[in-house]
Length: 172
Image (cartoon, rainbow, N blue to C red):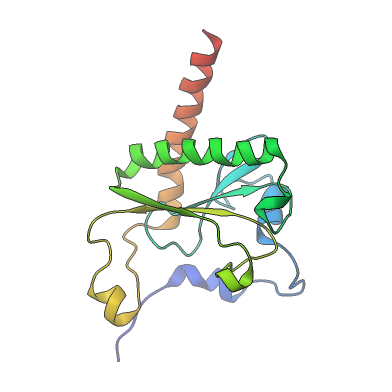
């Protein structure tokens, strides 16, 4: 028998299901512990968080604070913030991982594949040539070579430096 060790999933298995309607994104919005919730950055209308079950290293999500299910429900400042923060995230990911490309997208609605259809979120997935291999194709399993907490520490440090340098440029 083959074994695939996935110790990070234990928290998911032991999660508190006493409120099945609770939104994981709203919990992140309300939390004051960004590291525990893997929140990398908070902007005016949205925030950036790591995907707990990434397709690749650096898989981020940009999430509006407001709990809405569709892009159409965002107002102009929220929509602009979503795209500006997405652009910042791409710069951070480029500095951290130098990917050869990105998948950027929103799965709007359960029929479109949204795992959390009630709270809109945009995925940013770094991509490299050959990042899918036989294990993905044959075993329907992805290999992620870095722990999510390591990804968080690395990206948070770059993001914090990016914000400091961006802030100093604005002051000039």
